[in-house]
Structures are given as structure tokens and as C-alpha cells.
Figure 1 (cartoon, rainbow, N blue to C red):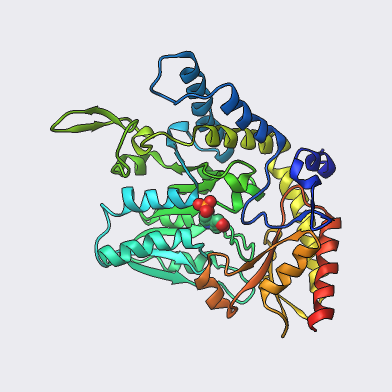
Figure 2 (figure 1 turned 90 degrees about the vertical axis):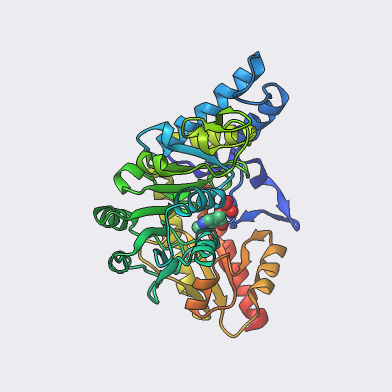
Length: 406
Ligand code: PLP
């Protein structure tokens, strides 16, 4: 039984005040707050169980290694990946996508080869492909969303041509909350021999993810949006793609032997993890995944869908507010501007005075902002611990802004 008040009690920061008002944290799209179990796991990790992983033969090193390596299985379960050997640890989605760009794509792509992208991508899933455009002459092929913020999966599939090597696409827009039918795209791409990379940064925290059913080749997640520590993350890499990858970062842990004349590499996934990793961060992410799986991703989705419906209806009643993207299946992420009124930064500052944390700006998604014809928006992004009462506080504060500027 999903009990939002019980969940809120697990997050110590939610009981603090900001500017003399109870915190209303609606900036989850940027980063989520951490439950006490994650904070405790990290404190214990540093206070009692810390040592470097993989290399030691002493008690603490083995303990840290066991706890760290156990997270691979947790990520595999969370994503329903066939094997934990297909999980590579990263510092987050940005590193995960760059890893694929450097280790898989760069050695294989040639001038004129194409990467299909949606206009809704975060810069983390754009800039690594621009690198290949700049260095190799790879062509970026863009697929637009419609005025409602919906992305037609068939339009993405139709963009796949004889030179397409990769479709790199988000499962959920961090600006509009639009959910993309990535399974349809991945299956169609696979049938055409084209690889797929799915940016799961936003989706994985709001809905159950099943990379096996989805049929993707790469699926990137970032720990800090999943109620875990910043600097943690992982990427699912299909074993066939992993076999095609060259090592990217070189150093300790990723090698088997190093001599004056040559080097041989560790087996995957460690072949792609060089140097001392974020040991305690990954352990913290594992606890966060356990926490979410304990609640149940389907239960989380039901709660957040109700929050979305409630907030969407109330926002629709404000005829001086422009909400960007109103897809029927969107998540509880709302980007908006006030008609003819203040800049998004001013609105977020006023909201902040009432203890309400939202984000304002271009949300690392400049091509989408340009496509939608907006310079900057405010974004209220909900999480499993948010309530209808907090939604009301947001609306009250927006009405105040309208009176002030309207
Ligand atoms: N992709 C999406 C859709 C995001 O929302 C974000 C973060 O905002 C990222 C990628 C980048 O994640 P990170 O900065 O954790 O690497």
C-alpha cells in the first residue's frame, strides 16, 4: 500500500523549512532528494566499511568489493537486464553516453553515417554525437515532436536510412515529461540492424523499465535522479555491443596485464571501468534502487500519475499560463511560462520565497526550446514523495505571480 506520508518521513530534508516556509521540492527532474537509508549507507560506508575495491586481500577491501559488486545485480534487476555482466558503472548518464560515443561509435562510424536523434534530447544525448559530427563527419538526423509535445515513434523509425548506425533517444523528456514509445523504435531499429541507445535518466525514476522487453542496445541511468548519490550511475550494454567496444578510459582495474610492450584487458564489464570508482556512491545507489523496488515502481507510477492528472487539471484552469507539451501519457513534469509576464527566473525566485523549489532556464535542452519557440521556462517536476497539497501550493504561488505581473 503506497503511503505518501510514510515515504515523506523517510526523507529528512522534506521536513526542513526554506525561507521560513515548509520546503516544497519540485526540482526532482534536476536531482531527487535522498532517503535516510541511502544517507545511512553512505555514512556506514565511509565510517566503518571503507577501502578500495578489487585490489585488496584484506578484510575491508573484500567487504567494500562485495557491497560494490552487489550493486551490479541490483541494477540488472531494476532494469530487467539479462545479466549483471551487461551493466557498466558510470558517474551518471552523461558519462554513460560519452562512453558509448567513444568506445563503441567512434571506432565504427565513418563520414556520412547517421545518428537519429529526437528534438527532445538533453544535451548529454546530443553533444557526444556532435563530437562525432565534428571529428568524423557523422550526420545528425533530427526528428521533431508535435505541438502537443508528442513524438511519433513511426516518424523516428521512418528516419532510419541505409546509413543510419544508431538511434539515440530519450524515454522521457526532462522538459515536457513526454514519454516516448522506445520499445517500438528499438524493435524496428533492431529489425533493420541499427543499434539503439535509450536515455533513461528521467524515465527510470517514474516508471518500471524492462530493457529486455524494450530491445535496446544501451540504456543509461543516473543515480542522483533515482534518490541515490550524485556521481553514481550505470549503463546497460547488450552483450553483443559490448563485444564490439574498445576500451575508452585506460588505467587500473580495466587491464589484465601490462608490460613495457603491450597491454591486455580485463573481461567486460570491468574492461570499461578504469581507475578507482565512486565506491560509496555506487553502494548508495544500490540502496536507493532497493528502496524503490521495495515500494514498487508500478505503485510509484500510480501515485505520480494521480499527481500529474491533478496538477494538469489545475494548471489548465490558469488561462494566463502556457504549459509546454500536454501529451496524454506525460509524466508529472510541467514546464511553463506566464503570458506576457515576468521571466522564468523571476517566477522561480518568487516561488522560492514561498519555499517552493522549481527550475528555470533552458533545461539543457536548447534544440527543444528553440523548436517550441520559448527562451526559458519554469519547470515543476514531481517525485514519489510529492503531494496534492504541494501541487495546490504551487498553483497558489503562480496565482500570486499573475496578480503581481499580470
Ligand atoms: N538526460 C536527461 C533526460 C536528463 O534529464 C539528464 C539530467 O538532467 C541527463 C541526461 C544528464 O544526467 P547527468 O547529469 O546525471 O549525467
